[in-house]
Image (tube, rainbow, N blue to C red; front, top):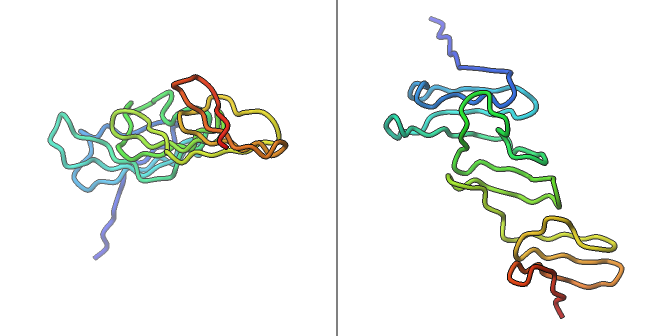
Length: 143
């Protein structure tokens, strides 16, 4: 006897399934190269059912699902490599995007744009290490 296993699938960019419409254990796949992913619903009762995304890490200058075709929310634990500035790794905590706390960068001269609090930056031409501090709105040399 042959068993056929089906999953919901889409090739539309940012087309995420609505979690309240997914059966228990049902997998949903998006194969669009702009933001592919494997999705399933969590076990929270409707209407608060959440969507879980299983990889890959989104790489780009704008957050994933920026112009949603389907479900508009993000998954807790969803990852994004933000290339808008200095390749900052972000993780969604269920409410907002959080930065990794160990952010470091290097250039031959100057500082990166859009730094985050606590970011370390090494300037090769002067062999100096700096830290960005939002409390003073700028970079401070580390002695």
